[in-house]
Length: 214
Image (cartoon, rainbow, N blue to C red; front, side):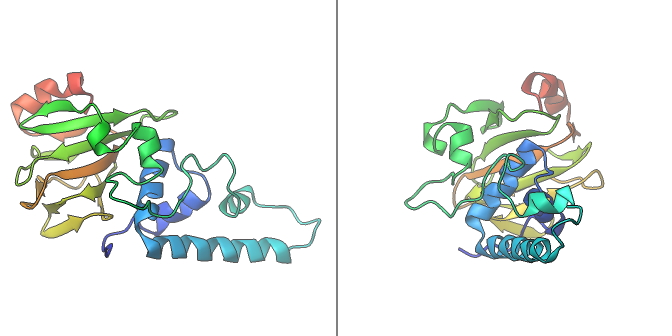
């Protein structure tokens, strides 16, 4: 598997420093479980910061942010682990949050064949949910009130002239209006994290939005 779309340096460094909210940290950790190159990049950053700490005089003040980068304490709400063996759709640590693999979960209907599983992450307004989109089906046309990150776990989707496959991350902000469509080969299962409600353009999704919590 070749991961082509990554979380980006800003999110990776914030994850290493333990400064991300729990939902976004979960997404980054899951991407790391599927992306060897990002794991190597994070390891390199930690080695550099560790060397800097060791070179400091013992009486020098320690930057708490840098200290968080080279330790694995409570700041990391979702630890990085190697990819799971076997045929799991959801790698660790995501399986622990969801309570099982994709086939074990109680999916809730969103309409149009799309299903979701909200995940319990605490502390902020940022939410995480698993989405299952039928092959060839598009999600409703929408914009964003804030940040959105979507990590593909199975199948694929096409968005803004780009294909995203297992391990790939798509990022969106309030400037983006789009309508991703699942690839034809299989249902697309992904992890979506948002820090503000979506802005749907059609009437039915807008009416259902308060009920579904999107």
